[in-house]
Image 1: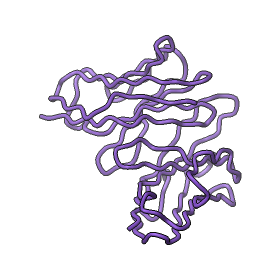
Image 2: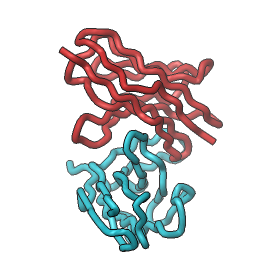
Image 3: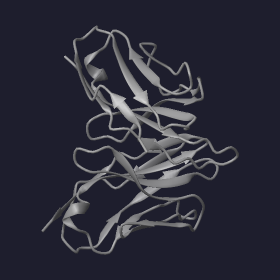
Image 4: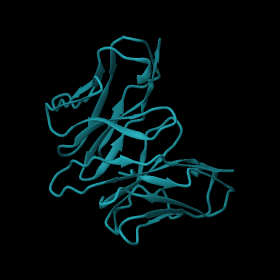
Length: 117
Length: 110
């Protein structure tokens, strides 16, 4: 079946502009995650959704970053007033939610490479 | 908080050499441990996993054993191939909180 998809694959924008990045999770996966991966680093957690609600948004770096998942499926990461330091690959992952256990295998999308000029 | 520390790279090996990439973790509770791989131009893929102490994850000739006493999850392969060239990430997950190491770039030369 289809994996996690992300659009666009590349986004170039100017400093100060607003961008939206989209993630389509695997069908039936209730958990959805956003990460940011800077060059030479591992993915850094941003936010996690369980269904429609943000269960943990502690990784969002500041109030310029916001994410929604209104129907519990597709999610959009929104960045206002972009800065050059926001340039990175933004990864989305989804998983089934297994109640009562720590294990969750996350399936990653190919990422969106954001470049802020 | 939870965190993962993995061996810094890059690592360059000849084909058929033995590979070890060290990974240690700090966590509250009992996390699940993972190795993810990122091949050139591709997204992150799960390589192997272990969900409890003493479990051994294995896939494609790679192995890692969950060692609670040393809080480690070292990745090993007995004979690497050129096609194993990639970036390898150690990760832990607890209560849906996933933390990754910085990644180790492996280059295998023929």
